[in-house]
Length: 362
Ligand SMILES: *[C@@H]1O[C@H](CO)[C@@H](O)[C@H](O)[C@H]1NC(C)=O
Image 1: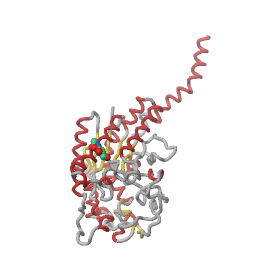
Image 2: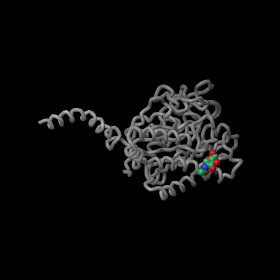
Image 3: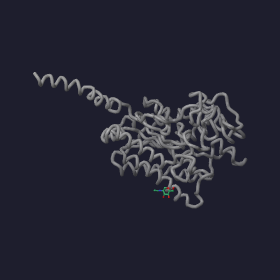
């Protein structure tokens, strides 16, 4: 008799605790969608640069005008590529890591406008890729405290890690290429990117999505600065270096897959996807691929868009490939995201993001 009552009391006492324990997996376990961690530059930054002092910032009108209806720090009239990827993966918008009080349940965005793989790139004004990795390690530590080592590792190995990085490392304003051969310099950029990927892998990350670099010579900002006469060419002083970068990137990803057990990736030929739209805008539903929607001067490629700058703004951003002198419109971002999500070889290989999200990992 006494033992029965003991068990009843015991169960009544322990059941709330059991419920809490049993509840944990439902917020982080099998039923939970695969989370998304985001690294990189302005193409992926959802507002991190709003949280520290930097001139590299776009939290002013008309950025965000058509979707959010207020500026969020994103370099477009609306959503960026990771916002669409999150939607396709049935996740909420992934918050910037520096936003106070965020939850890590669905992933974190570490990207920073202007960032490069090298710490010298826009030094002091951005969160460089190495610092992004150290922020990720803090998140990992937090998750371990919250979930325990095993569960945290499961959570992180299931997650997808996407990168847009490198384009700012090949930029006339910041690049110390003259002190190195191009091959050496590309080796440094790829070497630093590789180390960050390995750093994430060592904490449990297994699935990586990576963009190669586009030819920036046909961006409105480059067209505006280029002397008349070189019209029509998308080459600039860093074209060769970017091409070397893309070749080296493909090679290193194949090597990582061979070296690291369980490493899976999706590489996007962003170079080709972007060029196709610049060369054949109407095929993709754009009326204009040379001039930006927002900016000033020739091709609206000079000065800034909004804020204290004098600028022109188009009525229909969806008609434009570029929203500002250097960044795609929301419509272009959506097309790129769709391609990354469900596209095929040769533009997306060896897996697309949809497949990466569904892949089972140990
Ligand atoms: C990373 O970049 C630094 C310059 O910031 C360079 O000195 C170093 O060699 C690079 N690391 C690798 C592994 O290439």
